[in-house]
Image 1: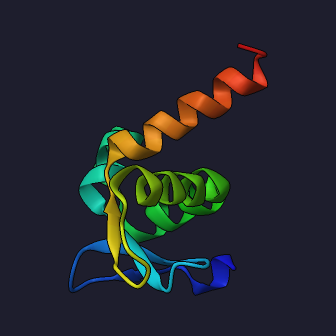
Image 2 (image 1 turned 45 degrees about the vertical axis):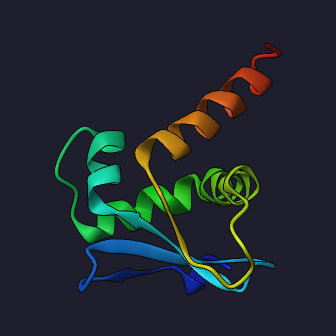
Length: 96
C-alpha cells in the first residue's frame, strides 16, 4: 500500500490513504522536521514514512478512534501523534 503514498507540494505534506476510512491522512513537513530534527526534503519524509509505515497507519487509526472522526473525513497527524505510537511500539518491543 505504500505505493499510494506521495508528496503534495501544494500543502507541503506527505499524504496516504487510510484503509477502511475512505479518506486521506496528511503529515506536514513541520511534523517531519520535529521527528527528524532537521528541515527535510520530500524524499527524506517519504523514506521516514516507509521505514515506519505501520506506526503512521496505527497513529492514524488511533486518532480516528480518539477524535471520533467520521468515515470519509480526511485528517492530519502531528509529530506528537506519531511519537506517541513510536513510544508505544518501543515499550511493547521492550516488554514494558
